[in-house]
Amino acid sequence: MSGRALAALILWLALAGAAPVRLITQLSTARIDINTSFRGAELLVFGAIQYPRGQTPDRTPDIAVVVRGPAAPVTVRRKVRIAGLWLNGAAVRFESVPGFYAVAATRPITDLADERITAIYEIGTRNLQLSPASSADDATTRAFEAGLISQRLRAGLFAERPGSVQITRDVLYSARIALPAAVPVGDYAAEIHLIDSGRVLASTSAPFSIGKSGFERWVYVMAHEHSIAYGLSAIIAAVLAGGLAAVVTRRSW
Amino acid sequence: MDIYLPIAELSVNGLLIVLLGGAVGFLSGMFGVGGGFLTTPLLIFYGIPPAVAVASSATQITGSSVSGALAYLQRGQVDIRMGAVLVAGGLVGASIGQIIFSALQTVGQIDIVIALVYVLFLSVIGGLMLRDALAALKAARAGTAAPARRARHLPWVAALPGRMKFPRSGLYISPLAPMLLGAGVGMLTVIMGIGGGFIMVPAMVYILGMRAQAVVGTSLFQIIFVTAATTLLHATASKTVDIVLALLLLLGGVVGAQMGVRAAQKLSPDRLRLALALIVLGVALRLAIGLTWTPAEPFALFEGA
Image (tube, rainbow over all chains, first blue to last red; front, side):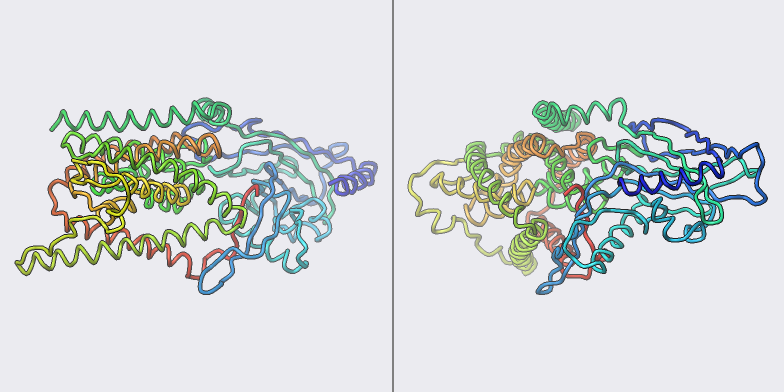
């Protein structure tokens, strides 16, 4: 993490003097509320590219928007067949897997910049640094990582959308990020990178959060902080519902 | 009708969950089974995290068992004394089961062990019920009287010391027998995360030799207490009871249970047993396929572990 930050700092220092291009960013919302009817949400990331002395370049640069959610450890186990049964076999633990990760870009990620640059800025799911903690060899770890990523992609929790960033008149940019209903709650960040000819000219970041509100929040807090009362009320609700149904149907027959 | 579940942390189709609860409730009222062995796998198949599915279906089973048990109580088909003895044994068994569960968890393969235990029990019980139901139906078709049922309990039950009258069940046996049975089922209840009715019902018939009319109501009566204890255990230990999910399941479940009780009074008991046998065997087959077929996902993810 500190290595990455240092690399970014060096790059920024190297570029700051030469080309002070700045990115201005705004998110459609700073907090996404999860309520009873939550079916996922859409985050609009938009802003402007500020060129020195207002001179727009000859050609349109690229923009990559990276949205990531809170990280958590995930253990991946490979299923193995023993005596005809599929059991959970060897495991690789990944220490920091983002609960949500999406990239929107003007072009396919491999066309934006070379592998070194996309790896430094963690642009693209294959460039994610998931911090594997295992004694397994590199190839094995990579196979487990690929398995993890493909499952997350299918669940919609990881996404890569090349061509989904619009740039208007070389200055204004916007991207829509789809957040599925199963997104984890927590603190998120949208990072925006301005890339030209394979070099990152400017980067900026905007935080937002996803949290439960109203009834959802109340239930969650009750379940965690007053768990005995919560459990008892669940039982009482169940008994009352059952009793009510019995009484109602007896009357009507 | 999409509804966000605050504990499971995802959005579900509310109507679908209510219908699922209704279908399982119907089986519950009809056969005296809790239906956990159906609800839990179906919820997991829908995408609910397994821990939440197990805990929340326990809450639903409490409700549909109350609904069903009250209906049987009105008809005088609940042996409360027998039920109380079973519950007492069940609580002892549940605490032993909790110890075994923790031990299995440290070894790792808990989900595989659970699936194997399911397949084993479901296929043995389903097979026994199918054999009996088919024999009875064949006898009825041939016009002869059904073969004389084992009216009595198993020999070892009679050998136990101390005797107690269970008039509604038509039994005069040692209370140790139902207590041991309750303990055995209670142990499995914790390990398998179910009400245990589908084991209890045949055990009452084949091991204790209870009068058939009292079996279903008494089974539902004891399930109320076992699942209520399970709900409380999950709510305090793992905090995985999703009350919104449970209420959706209950909405369908309590109504379904009432309809199931009525249906059970009209259908012939042999056909009932045949139907339950086929359902139990179907679930066993589905689980066996899951264990042996090449999985679509070569990797399993364990979040936060």
